[in-house]
Structure formats: structure tokens, C-alpha cells
Length: 449
Ligand SMILES: [Zn+2]
Image 1 (cartoon, rainbow, N blue to C red):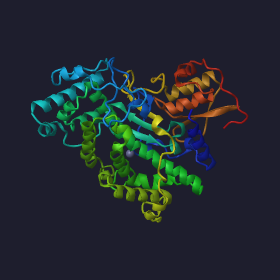
Image 2: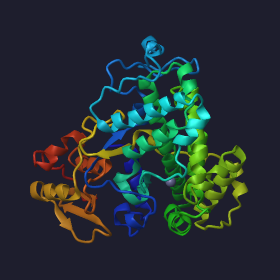
Image 3: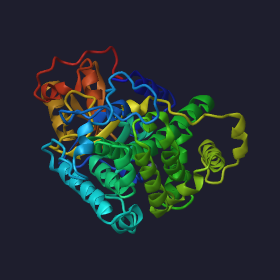
Image 4: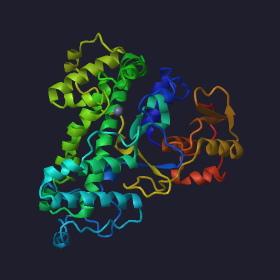
């Protein structure tokens, strides 16, 4: 278990903030989804996403576009000679048994082929593009703050939305430039999926940065600034043009696409496509998100950031702290945790992850009911009254309390890790043993936490 989330929770507790006993419950938090019945979840990281996909036997490395040496593990070989000898867009389907990936790839191929038949990029691309931007579902990606979710914190992204956005990005690709760059099909596929992932990730990471500022203000002022900001500023402005946090999260995902770790793994035409996609999609998104397009320049972004920081400090939509004062307190809104490693990807149960999973057993998930039953049946826990909101609180003399979100078909991996931590920190792959009553009794402590 990450030490830093424990540190963060200890600081919250020291200030009377108990994520598991807060009244501000999940359904009231706009923009936050839950893992549904029939879904499963795996943990991944930016490194895992940017590492080469485990699929495909003749997988070669990322195309180096900037002449910089590859990182260890990168294959130094260039694009495959064979790829250029194959006629036009007669690409092999990816070696995979997952119909989601195959179906998606077929659409991308059709797009590229149509582009070619119509002799030119602009005409056909316009025909293939949707007129309006509609998210494939209401909750494609979200950030669960530590202040409200404790061990269940982190970035959650639905794979289905990654496929959808990757297809939209593909509609902005200049396929002639891709052909000229001699990109192999596997590499095109990988870069499109990575681009979509990165768009979601960067947006959600901004929400983590906002919470990180909340932690800094909590320690520096000894008062809770984050939760009042969320209830008095963020929630009332959500889905209105004045919701600065969403404006800036969108602007940031656009601005950070030029980062080296992204750029070096994407051919210039693919980078161009994702930038064009964002320039098209952001203004078509709901109020608040759409205005992100106004914060792309350094000056506007900086102004927006300072105003948001004043809103968080003051807990007011119209803050009294002059935003300009932040010019002498720069960089207060950077990430607290190395969230690059705490990303959860949600997919249909039984499907194969499109990105490399960090954990050995990506499908190890359980429901609230199954965990509660195991803990009470096999390990002497009892369900305590007073678990507020939709939380379940489990207690046992001389053992740490365990908190679970109520009635979840799928409990988040961080929460499962919390439970396994009580038993001495078993890996998440031992979850079946926990559920089957095969783990030793939890370690006793002198006083329950
Ligand atoms: Zn957001």
C-alpha cells in the first residue's frame, strides 16, 4: 500500500476530516461515476501505457520522432520494411481475440481507406466526422479525491471511452502523412489508443492537482479549504461556463500534449491529429468544459489558475484574495502524489485490457457484500452501526477498522488494498484467499484506529 495515501489520511484525520464518515456522499458529487455491475477494473500507470503493448508477437518499439535515444526497453528498430511493401491499407487485423479491438480497428481501416479513395484528406475527413460532440457515456473518466474517498482515491477511465475517443482522433489523422512516415499498423493503433488515454488522464490529473492544493492549504492554514470549495464553488458552478476547474482541466489536457514523454512516442501526424481533435471537441462539450478553449494560451491559463487558487483559498465563487497575489507564490498547484501510477481502467468483465496492467491479477475485484460477508464470517469482524452515508464500517476488537463503500457491485482496487493491508499487506491477487477465509487472522493492534 502506498505510504503517501496513509500520510494524507493521517493529516486529514488530524484536522477532523474523516473521508469515510462524511455526509457529502458520492451521488451528490457531480462528475464522479462508479464501477457498474458487469464491469471489472485494473490498475495501470503512465509507464505501462507508454510501454509497448504486450499484444502482438512481432511487436516493435515506439517510433522515435525526435531523434532522442529510447529508454531502456525500447526497441531501437525502425518501422518494419514489410509494412511498406503491403499494398496500401490492406492491414492485418491485430493478433487478438478481443472483438472490441478488432471492431474498432476495422473502423479505423475503413476511415483510412475512404480517405485514400477520395484523394485527399479534407473532403473525406469532413464526411466521417460527427457533427456534434457527445461523450460515449456520462462518466468516461473521473477523479475520486482522497478527501471523500480515502483509499478509493485515484483516476478512473472507462476503456469503452478510450476506443470512442481514439476513433474520433483518427478522423483527424492526415493518412497521407501517416503513410509517408511509414508507421506500421500496430504502431498507429497503439498511438491512437495512447492519445485517447492521455487526453483523459491529463484532464483528471488536473483534478488531483486541485486537491493537492487543498492539502497544502490544509497544512498551511490548519483549516479545511478543499471541501468548502467543492460544495460552495465547484458544485454550484458545475455545468455552467464559470466552472473554472473543468475549464482548466480541459485546457491542461490540450497544453500538456507537447510533453516529451508523450511526443517522443507519437509520430508528428498523430500528435497533430489529437491536437486538432481537441480543438474541435472542447468547444462542443458541455458548459464549463467548453470554455477550456479560452485558456490555452499561457497568459489566459495562468490568469485562470490564479483565480481558481483564490476560489479554493477563500471558498467563494468571487474570491477576496486578489488572483494577482499568486504571482509571488507560483507552482502551488502541482501534484502531491505520483498519481502516474494510480490509474484504474474499467472494462467489461471478461474482456482483455488494452493497456498493460500493473497488477498481476487485473480482474481481482469483489462486491461490498462479498467482502463484508467474508470479513464477518471468517475473520471475526462485525458490522458497526453509524457508518454514515452509504458506507459500511466493520470493527473487531484489537484490529483496525475496515471501511467499505456501501452496496457496490465492484469495490475499487484501492479499497481492496486497504482490506488486504489490514491482513499484513497481501497483493491484490490474494483476494480470492481473503474471500474464501484462507488468510491468517489480521494482525492485532493495541487500540483500534
Ligand atoms: Zn473534469
